Length: 53
Image (cartoon, rainbow, N blue to C red; front, side, top):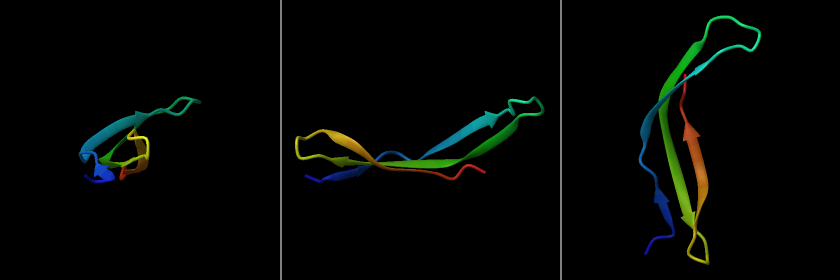
């Protein structure tokens, strides 16, 4: 039994629009999520990384 697991790396994208108006900027990249098992058996988010550009 392992105490850490990696969520699937996935391609991700989002758009950001300035509150003051203007053109939206699109960001895209990959993400990876790592969970760690706690002593009580529950899984807790340990690391979450994004490479949005």
